Length: 73
Image 1 (tube, helix red, strand yellow):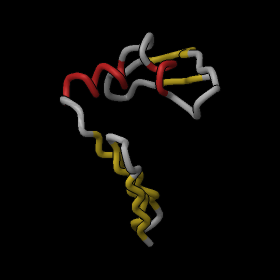
Image 2: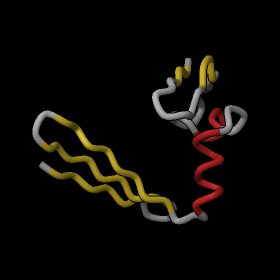
Image 3: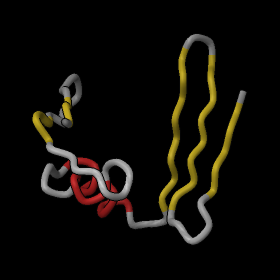
């Protein structure tokens, strides 16, 4: 099963599909790679875009190294 959503006027495309027992969630953004990396790895930037409009997000833990963990509340 594959589902693709393209938000009109947005800079992202989201694709969700299953492969064996895994659920794969892919998002494509029309922004420079370094800017996207910062948005996903800098704790100060996560609350600006994570979650639906009108919600708040606190980064409780963020270790972006291989094997690291992240926790948002």
